[in-house]
Image 1 (cartoon, rainbow, N blue to C red):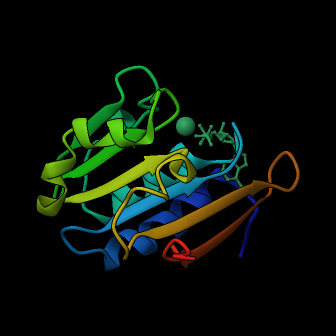
Image 2: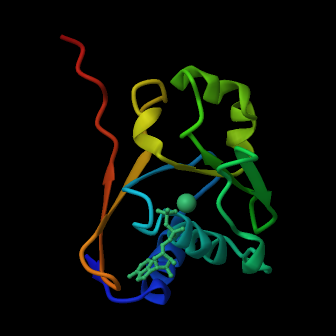
Image 3: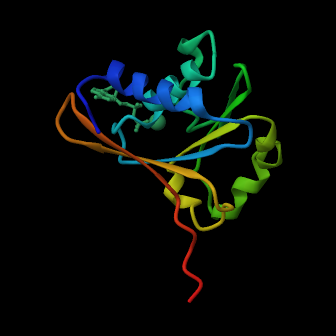
Length: 141
Ligand SMILES: Nc1ncnc2c1ncn2[C@@H]1O[C@H](COP(=O)(O)OP(=O)(O)O)[C@@H](O)[C@H]1O
Ligand SMILES: [Mg+2]
């Protein structure tokens, strides 16, 4: 799909957020400015998080937690020296809420099957393309 504003991207995130159950893992991919954090603001809305201003990039803290109908764990994988370090970031809590990971392609190879990939891409200054698909299991051969 294509969105024409940050608000539309938030709406797409909210629509997905409404459908997610505890334990859901969402891996967001896309370059800087493609709208990963904006999409997560929508996810938060769809999960019933009240104060959306609090939803901001977790680049420096590596994980934010927001209280909604289930907690939303918001992570950023950019600074991990090794993808498996994600398991040290409260990963064992993920079953109790929904986990959204920016720069999620960095950890695709280490997370269990069943994650959802949200691939964002810049189209123009105000347009973004968004593709939502299951993460394919890694090839075994
Ligand atoms: N269609 C759109 N969808 C998402 N963000 C958009 C859109 N159009 C413009 N923007 C702007 O692009 C920026 C996206 O930033 P952000 O969500 O922080 O990206 P990322 O987390 O991928 O670096 C925001 O400033 C947002 O307002
Ligand atoms: Mg971001």
